[in-house]
Image (cartoon, rainbow, N blue to C red; front, side, top):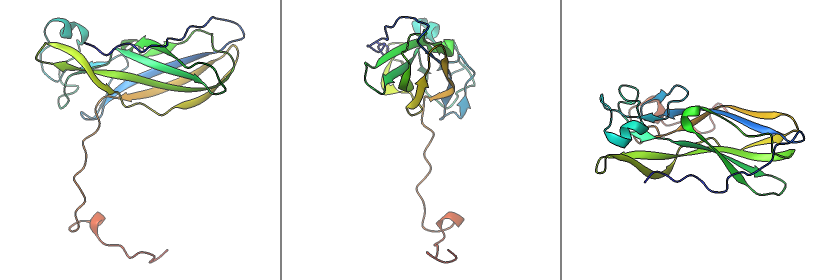
Length: 187
């Protein structure tokens, strides 16, 4: 019932004439206003652990995300797409590792790289996490040049689990931001 691992795993061979990618990440719960420590990949808002399998999957509970529904990210995916032709592929890592390094197996050239994750949510009716059918909020694609014998570093990637709360709609009266402006005055 959890989100499936992505297909199209990268299958490549190490070589001195190849390069690698290193990624480090943290997870942020914007709804709770928390950037979690490295390796924290789940959150339970209650003051007690979840029962059974769900409790084994997520042992982090308590005050870190009091305003957020329970969530879990199991795997992080690094999507690797050669810019100048070639087959895109995916490398996965366990979220709690907080770091992924590919083998030195990428031929030199330009690549589009993106870090993504799928979010699982807690379903009380079956006392376990299930696929929420929504990805974590992730940074846009990053284009990097892979060079033989070197690793490209994507340090400090932040994946978001819940969007921040939305602000109320603008009012037409009663505030500095709602005061009418004189277009063109003082320009």
